[in-house]
Length: 444
Image 1 (cartoon, rainbow, N blue to C red):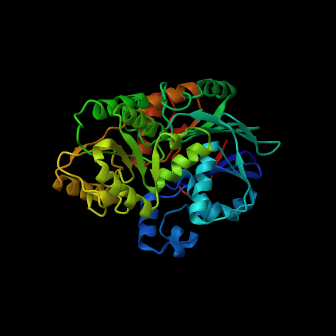
Image 2: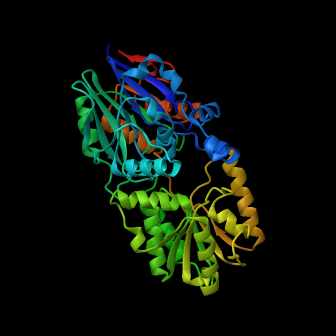
Image 3: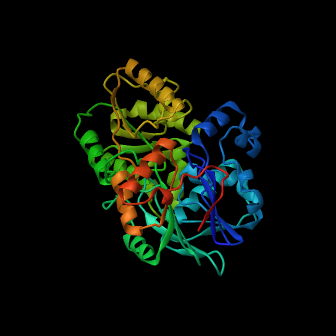
């Protein structure tokens, strides 16, 4: 009896996050995500109709839930911490085998519904929407508190599991942004409160733990965008911006720049349509009142042709494909697949970083070479991260004061960096735990 943790994905690795926690004879699952590069590789190579959980598991694109073993029948609820695909997008493929609800914030559940719709999947699970900072009663014994956090996607949460044995904090993707451009700043009061109540263990994202700094606010990204789009001479030029489709706050800042440039704003790409639609369904924004959104291939082709005829200098195009994805809008524009040809000195702004995986680096290099051949001016890295640097992690530990510390969502090197942060904060080595997939750690 007590609290036990069994990592299913995302520990000592990046992606396909999934963690099972057992309290006596009841289990909850935090996150159920995909490994995005592996998923893309599989879905590019296979006919979409042949994709199955078995194929995805063999391709290491989703968590190996067989590691749950005899815990599976004890699962009482699944909680995605936020709507990024490496935390939520395995739900459509494997959640149907669990007799339990799926519980998340409005935006997370809206994104999940969009994915289910796109994949023509109907889940038998009850989908439960809970407001930010809400509490879900799993049973008489345990409850899960959603603690609002700032991240590069709306309505991200840390998940606090309240048990008779103390609190377990699942501190997933976050940064401590005190000037967010969408939504509230982090719920520091809740973090202080659970710190006083007693946090037995904190499972902490270590992706940026090696970076010795505090992650800049999204306000800085807004300033960088304004310096670029409003400060450069863009007269008589086509201007294209590409960024993460799920980064609703960033899209909001881009729209504001487009208005100041007195250009019509057009969003192009399926993923942009999906995430903007989810944000509108969740009541966060109403972009469709301000911008035109084109997602289907025929519509995109027709609209780009008309934009070229009317004059690209009248438009600000926001397109998918910031990682150089061959099937995304930017790659197709660069490779002259549309009647919209980029000309010398046209401007392409990358409001993102290249995600450091082999496939992303390769595809992004190919895209940049094609753009350079066209004489296009590129401005890159107009971006701030959504992940906690070392100083953010130190501040979190000061607030919640966990007894035990578990790194996750990072390579062994990143986990080691978080360990060093913990040691610097006075934690003993015996209170910092590196967990392996499929292992079980019982908290004393």
